[in-house]
Length: 425
Image (cartoon, rainbow, N blue to C red; front, side, top):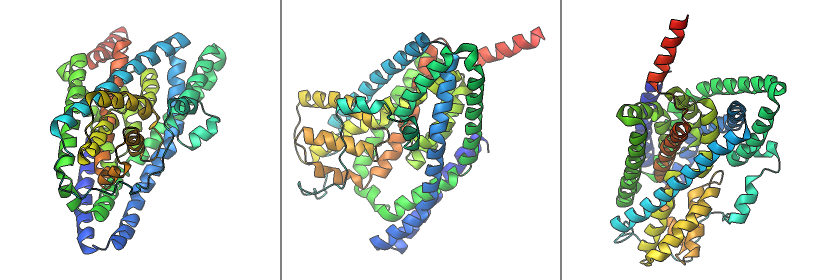
């Protein structure tokens, strides 16, 4: 299935999912019944996401090891990694600051016209430790096998870096093993193609299950917050595309967006950035980013460069503070921003990670944690936008590092190369 046809089918799946979910919600209005029906519908999307998780660990390991082996030496690895981290920190700060500014301008929490949850109400979230010390400790896996079994992308990245650097240091002795791992990467990309054939059906099931339990009415009730949050995401998309325009020009950014359109839509409709990872890997290489850059920067971005999630954190904390009429000075807001810069880096691999980070931040500023109950019901719809934004942000970041390294191959350069080869023959 071609990329444009798959994207169209995903859109059709979304529309059908909304229609079927709405019909189910009005046919079986009883919450218990609708939840049971949604559970059966969601089986399809759950299986799809499990298939994605099945291929993520071997795909990240094999492509990253091959990429590092191709980089050739530790100096190159350090240079590319340093540039990537510098970009990630800058992008995270801009995303957090943008969310903070927009939520102060739009004030979505004021005049909410909704009953506020009791201050002592429980959120049902399992608190997670988010201290800098424990995050740094968590970086290093106790076992490479355990990291892969749990899909701990950041730990897989750390192990793969050590493995790839050691493999490159072996020189000719490691050539045979490098070829074997490259073959594994090719096989995993082929498996990815098979898994993606199920994407439209999975999208249909995910949307239908959500609408069945939540109903269309939840979109009306929280319409103002949803619209203003997506306006904020739209501004962030414009900012990211603007940076891409400055780097690549109009034709370049248009071509990039056409190539990442499919993973962007897939991440949005499934509310999962992981679902888009395999297609991003292949499509960015098609754009002209070398495999050694893509396979190194992209996995790091999944832990350090979650632009949509960053913006959501400041937006949601301030929304809850506004709902409870708790004013925060600009000094407190900037403190919150820097706190989120640290704590949010542990989001990868944590279930309902953004909510957990927000919960920890609320308690730091004496804002009722129960305020999370205001947004938990619509978190699926918010997560769709966050996930899609993360895909766009990581695509721009990977292209930026490649260009920074002087290794981004444009379509014109590829045509020149093909012409030169043909002339030589």
